[in-house]
Image (tube, rainbow, N blue to C red; front, side, top):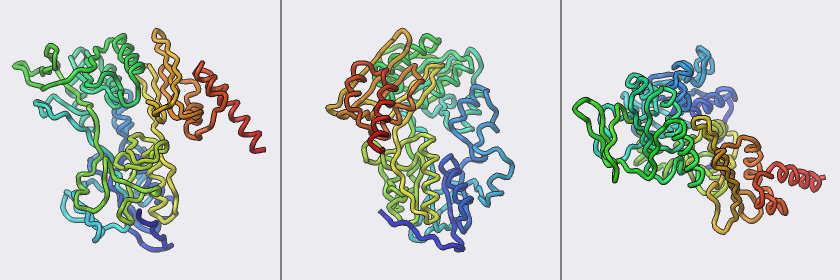
Length: 431
């Protein structure tokens, strides 16, 4: 990959950041506070001040107002740092000329560029997904529309029960609608839970009054004569709804990079310094396919902690302070109507690896540990909040467990004892 740019004290550099989510905002603040030696421009393709998408469900639930979604609340925050926030989007990049073409007309020159364009929701290619009352829940504008079109007692269908879908689920329940969830996979949150965990989350939701259908495909959506919607379900009776919210996945925003020469895969491919295949251009957050800490391959980890750290590390490298990023760990923590679920690392195990489980379905408690030899490489936890930090620590440090692996195979709940014992052994060896 490309080398790290040189930083010359006192030079005037145009630092341009495309995207105003956590990665972009933290990058701009990092540059501003370290004496970057130039101008900083953040481009946002939405009219609002930079905000957190993770706060939108709290807005839907009316726990906060729109101001509460803002990433920074101090008046003049960006201006005081010398950061210019402009509302426009990029249609193309000329990497040779170091210039961005803007949707609003004109162009913007850069010396160092950070792509922090995030992701956008995708919808299944079925008829009716463009109907007025079929909505996504991704932007503040989406949230306003959902709030405008829902009232207590309305029949709402949520398409998708992945991580994002389950966050939206909780917000819709708070709006006191009659909620039905349709998921094409054989379980809820299929990208962070195995069948046991996913089934337990579904049972919990049903107990809370949510109608959940897994292994169910929507063939199309149509409009009834009374203005309501009808969902055609494969192998099942049609389902009527006042509103449909689609949460069937997202994809990195990389379409505008076509022809730029910047290498992409499922996202923008970056090296250990978060630099792309083009020198002086970096990527961070949900658009960046960075190193996976556990596999060593490239992947997009669309979680806010990764985006925040990406933004910080990318900014350091943009200013010439060579800083490597170790790679991100798959980390998911979800609160579904009060039931906490967590997955870390290679939560679905590795070929030839051992698996230890402890299940108490009645209490909605589940723990699964995945091993490669005597090293913990991944875990799932449901209904358990104690010691999840210990699980994460053992995975990230790749600590050999020795005889304690056999203890955990017999009783996964002995994780704290295993952690303390291995930590003491490591301290003795270091002494």
